[in-house]
Image (cartoon, rainbow, N blue to C red; front, side, top):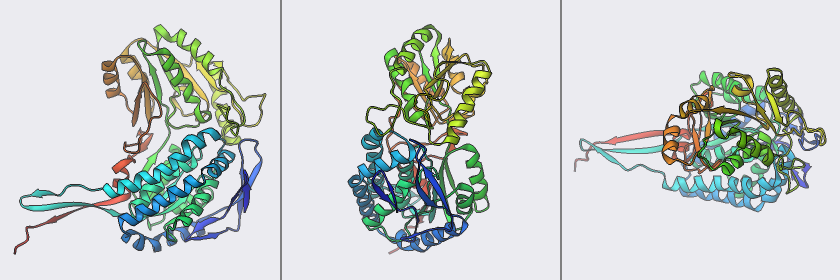
Amino acid sequence: MATVAGVAVDPGHWIGGERTGSAATFTDVSPIDERPIAEIARGGAQEAEAAVAAAHRAFPSWARTGREERARLLHAIADGVEKRTEELAQVETADNGALIRSHRRGVMPRVAHNFRFFADRLLGLGHPDFETRGHTNHVSWDPAGVCALITPWNAPLMLATWKIAPALAAGNTVVLKPAEWTPLTASLLADIAAEAGLPAGVFNVVQGYGAEVGGPLTAHPDVKRISFTGSVPTARTIAAAAAANLTPLSLELGGKSPLVVFADADLDLAVDLAVEQYDNAGQVCLAATRLLVESSIADEFAERFITRAGRLRQGDPREETTDIGPQIHRRHLERVDGFVRRAKDAGATAVIGGGPNEELGGLYYRPTLFTGARDGAEILTEEVFGPVLTLQTFDTEEQAIAMANGTRFGLAATLATGDPERARRVTDQLVAGTVWVNCFFVRDLQAPFGGSRQSGVGREGGDWSFDFYCDLKNTVTAPWVR
């Protein structure tokens, strides 16, 4: 057992209701101080095969389990999450460096809500029967089978349970492969699910590197659904592995989202929305990293933004007063810094930030804002996934829309305006899976979520999750002759 933030965490896999190890391990390092916190079982093809086999064996019984019982067990898991909120928050902060206050107040309550929402949604899932020339059509949602879920490191437990909950609710069994940089709360979730009474094999966790365990998992013929959140290059690899078996995919990928600020916007609100994009040290796929501001207010916007960003407190994420924590890993910090250095070399100006925080050292990177980047520059088109924003100006509505849509991504967009008609016109033309008007990061599980273009394939959330995790069936019955 590893002890992390005073909490005992098992570093082994969870397969078929039992803890198992591997011949090899890998070191889990905390981004707070870059110190090792656990030696984690390093799975490969053997562990992937064992986990899929366990899930495959458990599937027939779980699929036959009634909706009410499945919903009851999901609520029991949510109860377990709520009882261990502080432990989960402490462990996840140590593991991924996100703010303890966010984990306590928002993330872990959302984890529990993920289970409760899909449990309740399952009980109401249905479609009215309809008639065709006297014949009755009945639509049903049949469990698909074993689901392979591959999740990222920036919000490990919340994004994992966003997939786990609907997959289990639908009657599927699950093999979760958490990100190797943040495996710990997935292990705790396995304990919570077992304590809630989830049958052995219904939920499994295999840890390790993508090529070693993720590859065999996504290529396995007994896997019937794959859901992945992460980068475009990894998504291409997963899609290629799934292609041989025609395994359906749900992919939520990167973004290079815009925040479009018109001159008629509430400027204080717009500045607050812009500064909010530094949340989680910029490690948010939905972040509006391209600030597009109408020329007539650009100077005042920039002045207020610099003042407001200057009040952010960067430091230890375990302290309640901290606003920005570290980057996740040394390799990732170097990636972010590479983008910044190349942007400077290409002629862009860092009006704030522009490098690591020398006072704090370690993995702390200063919130950065670039101006003067040339059209088509890398810093304007590629996802940095760090606390790095750019500021550009526009003169017309048409120009703003063209700039907003001017990347290969289409995950999200944010719009600040005081004109409802303009909001409708612009949002109708934005290429994005989610658009926020005069707000940011307001998400309801009833809504579809996903990206357009290279930001993803498919939608999850609400009934869209059940549509993905199930095989929809229409049964047509002729009139009965009595």
